Image (cartoon, rainbow, N blue to C red; front, side):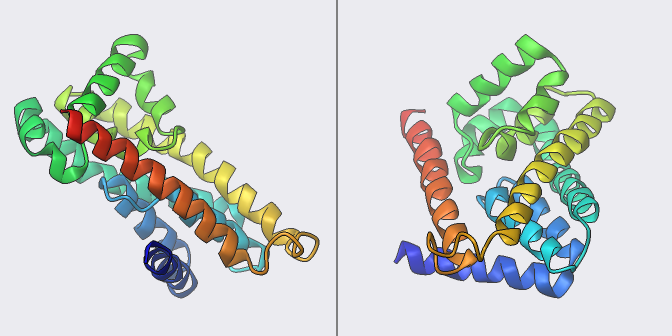
Length: 206
């Protein structure tokens, strides 16, 4: 059942990028940044694969990926900004945000200050929920959104480049998998399970 659901999601991701091009990348990355578990690890490698098909350049794909992250971070940031810690502590579970997640964010900000938002944008899982705590902590908007853009840009380049290399070597590596889709499904399955386990474990312990 999980495989069927993931296959449907992957097909949808691919169709969005094929039909909408770079704006499809931006849309999907915006959804991820809105605390919705749609892993960028499943979005950007396929964008890289499309780069090898000549649909758009790697620079365009990375730029729109970063733009999407910023756009998706805006509602999450302001939800935390105006809702405050009490709101998130009470209703955060509906956004898959636990007390433990807030504590992690607090520690990152305490240790690295505004630079924590730049670093967190290049970390799996953490990058998805960092906007809400940033809003709660009243992070300076100009720093938060600037660091979000550049951190996400680097993250986008890395995953898109991985997709490019996979796309260039599909024939060489075809003995490992039958289709590129299969690899993406496996990646999404693993990351999805880690994401869900991580968040629901913390929510249960909150």
